[in-house]
Image (cartoon, rainbow, N blue to C red; front, side, top):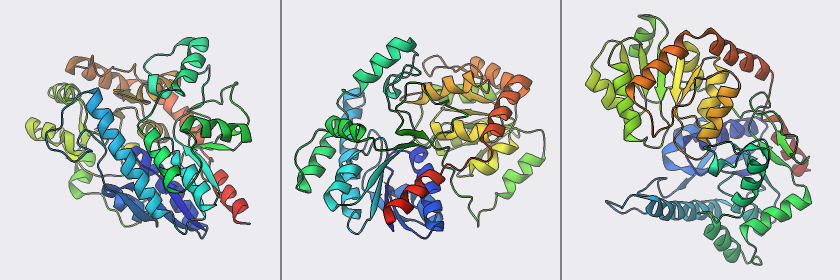
Length: 406
């Protein structure tokens, strides 16, 4: 079959899609992934074809120079990005025989309806309202069972930056008008399976979930066959005790977080690997034998060699830390990150989260020291790692493809 996977968003959205794509390719399917053009090496490395989105995800997504900052500008940029992502998906759709939609690309179902092929949700976050957790867009605080459920229902009614894209796609395909929320209610009423790339060892199945929601397990990316670690990184790892890895995601982090990282490492008490372009200046300014900067090093290779990891608590890096059985220091910044930070703490695998508005060098340095030395935190991470062993998160969706191919 020719499978179309919609994966607009950050690197954390694309990496699991490549895990699914590689599994589908191994089963004999042809896979196209709609994602940012900067992720082409990830997509093609999984044996898939990239359908590039012609806009970056960020405050400059409208292509203008010196765009104003703030919530309004950010939402406007997101609408532009979502619109161009939908256009890329529609352009890639001809010939597709099955469509996978992610949480910010529900128009995948509209495209599938328009071309007459099956579609399915492949989600990285729990979008279903539940007493067990607050909605991901309001995830900074757990509101209690009643509050979580109410907030989840309200969140489903909030307009999103991709609503206009959903409406445009239906219009261009000649489909009758249907609001994004109405389409979701219709699919729920039909009992369509909603797949989550989440391990039940990390998020126990909520008691109030309907039967058509599944927890498949994480969709791990394929290991790159031709990748070799830089010699300088291997030398650094061999030169002393296991370091802490610091990575703040693919979206440029808050400047306070970058400053806190530099302050926390200045004492030289912890060896550190800082990852990502935004942290390169930190390593350059410190110019310390205890700190090294790296670029795109696979977390499946790097994290098992670390003592702990400081991260923004996105779904992907949180899962990767647990898979490596190392403690986390969460610095949640936005959207679902506070949710995953709380899950790591509940699992006994992380220090208390440091909200991005409160982070400073001394707090971060203390949290790193705790994560590096705490046996209970390492034991918590190891327990989750062992519980996840043997899971094949791709099997459920591979089985779905086999059924719809008949």
